[in-house]
Image (tube, rainbow, N blue to C red; front, side, top):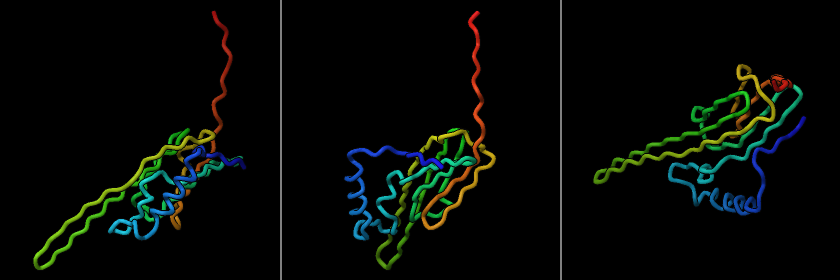
Length: 145
């Protein structure tokens, strides 16, 4: 089993994590209860075994119906679209609020995958996508005429 990083670490990782910690505090949550930190790309891993590629991403606070996944032989695209509407009616006031949040991310697979064998699950805020590997077409040498 080989674990493939899907995002390189850089000198700003510590700073990003600290900002995430601060803004995930309930004080900074939106009125609808959707975490501010969801506006960024999720933490993700790609694992390659002998027979399959396993992709996982941490996407807490969304419904599975809001997650869209598209796959090709060499890429997994994940997008989340969350739209919320809030309406308040009072005796002398009326308010209506619409909010949209989400992200789009693409991840290259370490090996070609069979797009017909892809299965996805979402449990406890973690998205898991499993796909069996296919053998890549072998190149061949040709002579110049």
